[in-house]
Length: 143
Image (cartoon, rainbow, N blue to C red):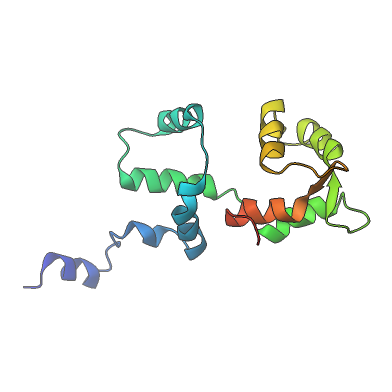
């Protein structure tokens, strides 16, 4: 008689490897999670979303759900390029602030402040959206 694991695999049972639920890019994002600066309020809100006690499997599942909404870098770049009519790689920070706070999934004043704290406009008031898009999708600044 074959061991239980071998029998389960032979019968086509589901893998118990939690990482098999995610693609390689999501696993890379899990590795980079330690670099993310999250407020306690945000963590508490996420904990409240859990269906029960949080173990590692539940954590990974919840984290994966949060990542599913992340668009590819090219998609985010294209959205900014619509506003960059001259193709310079930057847009006026005040203009982006207005759009983020009045269109679609609206940002709050605090969210805009956080973004500009992490990606401050240059002395002319321009936002380097290429670097912003890279960090959103890769989790670290370009060299």
